[in-house]
Length: 189
Figure 1: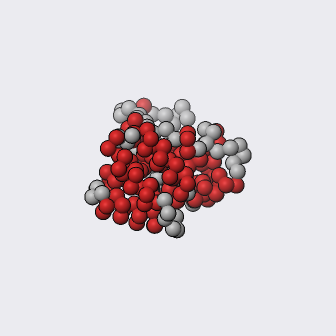
Figure 2 (figure 1 turned 120 degrees about the vertical axis):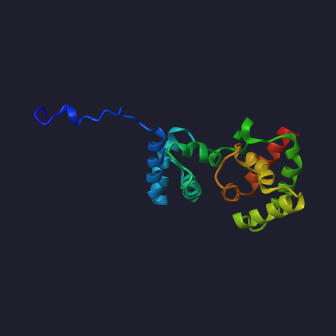
């Protein structure tokens, strides 16, 4: 190596590590994984964070497998799965609404209309949830979708940014969705 080294071939530009590029490359590799493999790779992160039990129950693994397609295209690192999916495994009373979630006192009519729209909804699927909430909030209250679904998203997930709302509500089920909406309404009323 000493004989092959020539100082004239050393690049004068300083080396630079680009963390944004590294994150983008990692995200690309996550997107190349199939959903089953991604579920398997997220499990240790969720277990270590206490989101899943150790070992995870079959019910937890079923929910995780069904939730994986919702976050597959949104993740940059596997550790983000804790923040993105933690609300699905938390008890309704353990959901705390982040200050930046945008849930304010003017959300009470939205939350009331959302609860009424889904309380007797059959079937409780993401398509029917979306149709019912659009009818109640966008058409019924005359709100723009961002203003209509933001308070519901905050109530369900505790955050401003989350996996798709209607699919998340389907995974949680009607009872849990209604409980979270009622708890959020009580905090802003």
